[in-house]
Length: 582
Image (cartoon, rainbow, N blue to C red; front, side, top):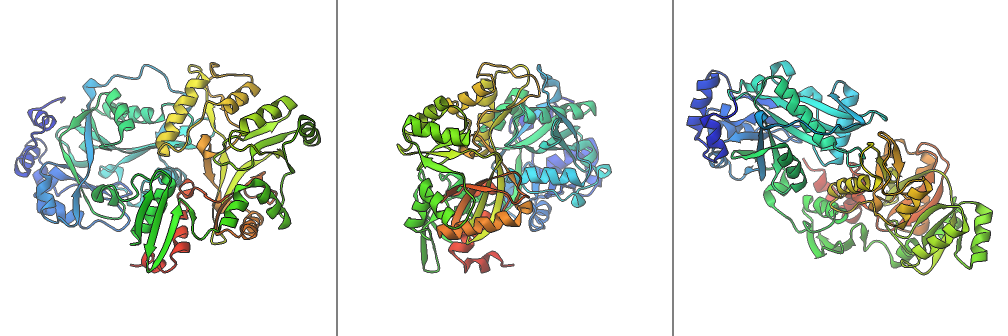
């Protein structure tokens, strides 16, 4: 049924009282003869609000939430009655509930290719979904706790790349008729997530459409979902599909997971992700935070009489000399060479004859400014004097001193060392797009940049600059070219995250030789927090060359590794006792 008087009242904001809602539910489904309905989703429980006899019982159930989980009471018609039962422990979730009536749904006019949608089936699928959820800051699923499907439990679907087999998206669906004999015959969507590294277009839209069409085929009437009030990108997609706002509410229990929802913007709200991850961890431990310059990522931490200033992960513990050794790539090179570490050949760019001689000796070279960061002014794998000269001119605006280095094949490996211990390691891959046979490379780059910016709070995008154009021309294409469906193309040579690169965590398989070399490099530079860049054939092999050291490494790039935790451990060792409390 598309619209009853009851549903029309909900859409107009005329939510009925608990008693009237119970009467309506009992009238159409006989719910008064069943216990209140609770569905476990693997990360927490959904408490179906209008199946509870009164507000007090719903509040009591929310207060039994297990540590590390997140329970949600949905379809709460009178939230003030629930909050009144435990105002210090419960809060009103600041999300909007949206509904799509299936009679309003229109199928897609285009075909999305390159991936398939299927149900999660085994332990490997659950691990892949949990890895994806952790990348998006979501709670992992414990499949052992799921309400069984035959008892009305949820179904998880995943999007799987047809070429690599990688899980690039996931969504959970709940059939309300099976879950609690919903008299309105509805369904709901939860936990939509797309891998921020994914270059396939339309994954989120396809997952939503798949869920809609699946429940339509089961004879259901509508699909509901919850979205944070300020998630404008997601709301744009849902509006395109025909969703409308539904005047109902959700209530949750206050906990560390939900803290930002009920405390509101904290002192680090305006900070970038690299500073905010540290500030959030400090606040969690009761460390005082003073934001000095949000735009620059500057803040001061105070705890137990100890005061430390930070700019993201660069802090007072790093000396000016150590910072200089990292910033000046010539000094980095000489310092690590004296420590006996493996390095590429290097020299300052000189006149045309000197540069040509260096190129002739090494055949392929890299050009970079002496003092630069975030991949700015870097050109990789140059093989002609004209390319080298053009790259030097591109690097000079960032530093008039420009370096030439021998080019080495391999993967770009970042090893994060904190307190002279390896905390995280990740292979960094250059930005790439996947053709669909319809859109130009320029359009694919724009779409990929939007996805990257949304996933990184604007910190990562693929610039349409001379280096990107050079990479395209080397592949025999340009911005207007259309790639065949499924064709992958790297659009940058450098793997820096700020220019659209992506990370693959390899901490668990890092070869001991690489870990030891990274610690040796950190000690040679005498720097307590550093991101070391190496070129390697593989993360689990010992061969390597060092290429750079970053004194202000991005801790947020290595989630779910405990980078912020180890950073705060280094700054405030006594706070570990608080962190390890009951």
